[in-house]
Every structure is written in structure tokens, then in C-alpha cells.
Amino acid sequence: MGIFTGTFIVNISGENIFSSLFNIFVDISSKMVGSLADSWNAGIVLQVLTIGGMIAVITKMGGPRAIAEKLAKKAKTPASAQIYTWIMGFFIFFDDYANSLVVGPIMRPVTDKLKIAREKLAFIIDATAAPIAGLALISTWVGYELSLIKDAYSVIGQPEINAFAIFVETLPYRFYNILMLAFVFFSAITLREFGPMHKAASRAHHKGEVTDPNSALNELMNQENSYMLPKEGIKYSVFNAIIPIGVLIVVAFVGFYINGVSSLEGEALKAVQANPYSFASIRDAFGAADASIVIFEAALLASIVAIAMGLQQKLFSLHEAIETWVYGVKALVITAVILILAWSLSAVMKELGTAAYLVQLLSETTPQFILPTIIFILGSIISFSTGTSYGTMGILMPLTIPLANAIGINTGLEGVDLHNYIVLNVGAVLTGAIFGDHCSPISDTSILSSMASSCDHMDHISTQLYYALFVGIVAVVCGYLPAAFGVSVYILLPLSLAVIFLTIRFYGKPYLNK
Image 1 (cartoon, one colour):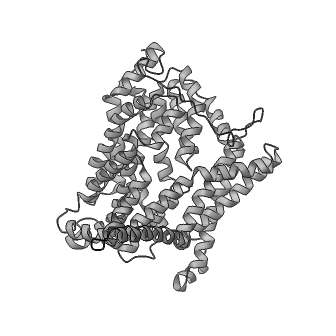
Image 2 (cartoon, rainbow, N blue to C red):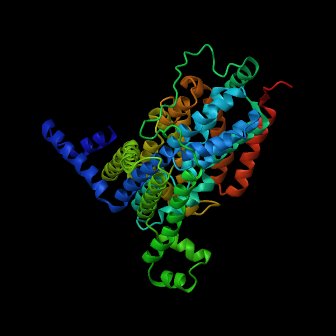
Image 3 (cartoon, helix red, strand yellow):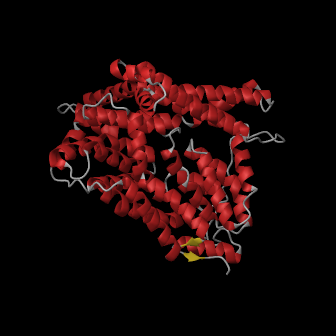
């Protein structure tokens, strides 16, 4: 609808509505084709689809399940069960969907046995899915985020910007992601809850009712497609996940260096050749690398390694392996569709001059300290309303970077340089989208988390909402507001973590028998 509205404004001609509609159709088509004709964008789509295929193959081999079962056997207490569920989120960092669908079914019997509420299990899964995938350097999210950053920087006249370096620089400013991961850990080790989650935890522990008996719970079990379901009787091995994922990571990082060095010229190339393994050389090489192509190549090689391992262990035939890989690709086609729509929307907004208009409107009136907070809140509202982090990032990123740049130039930043200020606002976009997604009942990740843990979906949302809002407020008050004044992120992060811990420790209530 956004693309249609924008192209309608561009192509409206007099009173001939039929001519306008024809022009709109042609314009939309050309923008979608144009977005895929870009070599960077094409590489992004290919890497996302290829990682989807690799995930499907290693799932078919039982690798992620083996990792989960190893950890599950060590969970003997409510605290350890929650911590191991949290740790699994870090292991399955490459995709939020895979995270939810693998962790939930494995840990559910363990948490049920230890009388942990399904609402808490769903919360831990949801709180370690998107936040981990959003922070990971290698994931199905990275390509999309890099694409948005690169496109938005081109609007302010910096088309050659190193998007991957900017992405890495935003990591300390992902306050919501970091604080939410810490919140899960602190609540697990202290066994304290507050709000609706305390009521659910007390019910489960004292009555043995892991789900609310008053809820119209639809027992949604995690039904893996037959293409991805491991065959009965096979021996699960952690190496069936560790080796392919390890290949993906190692090849990607080596590829960044090799690809980056081949792209360097002049003095930068001479500096790398003189001292090829210094930190500065590695940084410059990574900065010049084409991440879209390198991660695609790494994912393709990792897929081949995974298929070869499965064939060698006779876990499937070559026909079944390719069918499984193609199924995994199909599962992420919707991501490619969202990417194409986001790129097309960005093209429409450039044509309309949306960013230029907003920059002109707000750059001289918006105080520097409030913009990151506005971006974070606006991102959460859009994400809550649409249920998608991806779409929210696609809408906001093309506007945020030009706006932050203009405010920095027009008002004169105090206590913070322009580059760091833009990076701070980019971090606000990427985390605000996830915050709103956590609160939204139509979020696909939240729905998957409810399904995977067999928890009533609205019970999951109502208990998680309280925690998400609290962490979001801390992220603003102890993160984005003072960071915009130039306070070091390395002061703000420990402060924010302390606030989270102290709130859980002294406001949270224990629910176990004394």
C-alpha cells in the first residue's frame, strides 16, 4: 500500500484515472525489477535464501536438536532449565525462526517437569530469538540490515560507505537487545518475577499448572515439515550443526579479508601489503569487503558441506538432501519478498523526496537529544502495528540517517561527533523495530514462540508485554537519551544492566517454596 500510494502521487496525471493506474502499475514493476537488478541487492537475496537452505539441511540431520538435547540433560533445577534455554538462543543465533522452532520443543518437557510456566518458556524463547539474530554478525538478518544502511547513506552523499563497519559500530547502541538478553538471565538466576509473569510462575510452581486452566489453549505443537523432520532411529550429533555453521562463519570471515583486500586501492592497499595481519589491515579489508557476495559464497559452501556430511552418514539420499535444501530456500522466500518491497518503498520515498521534506521540517526544530528516542518509539509503534521488524526497518532507515545527518549539521552537536550520532540513531531503528515486535500480538516470531512452547498466544503476549515495556523504558532513560548528549555507551551499558538487575532483585518477587 505504501508503494502504491507513493507511485500514485508520482504518476497522477490530470483527470485520466485509467492512464494513471497504468502508469502506476508500470512504475511499481520497474522499481521491483530495478531493486533486484542491483548486484548488492541480488547478493543479499541469494545469501538469505541460501542460509535458509543450509538451516533446513542441518535441521534434517538433527544437528540443532542434538545441541539442544545435550543442554537439556544438564537442566536439573528451575534456574538451570531457564539458563540452558537462554544459552540455546545463543547457539542458534543465525535465524530467529530456527531459534524458536528448535528450542521450544526440546525444552518444553524439561520445563514442564520442573514446573516452569509455559508463559516463561515462551518469553525466554522470544526474548532470545530476534535480539540474538539482530546482534549476530552472521545471520539471516545481517544482509537486510546492511542493505538498508548502505541505501540510506547513499541519500546523504556517501554511497561508498562501509555498511558492515557501521553495523558493527551500532552493536553497543542496541540497548534493548542487550538489556532484554540480560533481563532473561537475571530473572533466571534470581528466580524472581513481577507483573503477570509472577502470577503465572506461582501458578505453575504451586499448583503444577504450567498453562492457565482458564485459557482456551489450543495445543499447538511444533509440527516440523516432513522435509526438515529427522528420520526416526538416527543418532543425533552436535557436529552435524557445529561443522556446517563453523564452515559458514570461518569462510565468511576469511572471505571478508580476501574480498576486501582485492577491493583496496592506492595507499590503503600498500598499507595492508606491508603489514597484512595487523588490526588496522584486517579492519580496512573487512571494511572494503562486499558482505553480500561473501556471505552468499560461505552459505553455499556450508550447504555443500552439510549435504556431504549427511550423505556420508547415510542420513538421507542426495534427492532428499536437495529437496530439503530447496524447502529451506522456499521457507525464506517471504523474506526475499519483504526485501524487494522494502527496496521499492525506499525508491519511491527517494523519488517523492520524503527524506528531504522531513529533514527540512524537523532538522532545525528537533533537539539533538530527543531524536534517537523519537526514532526508537516510532519504530516500536510501526512494528507493533504491523508485526514485522523487517518492514519497520525498511520504512524508517531511509528517513533516519538523512534526518540525523541534517540535525547534526544544522544544530551543531554538543558532546558527540556527527558520525557517532548517526550510528546511535541507526541503533535506535534496529532495536525499536524489535521492541515493537516483542509487544505485538501479530508478530510472526511471537506467534512461533507461542506455538513452539505450546503456550496460549495471548497469555504469552500479556506476560511478555510487561517485561518488554520495562526494558524499553530503561533503554530510553538510561540509554538513548543520555547517549544523545554524548555520554559514553561504556558507562551507560553497565548503568542500564545495574538498573535491570536491581529492579528484578528488589521489585521482583520469589515464587518458589521457601
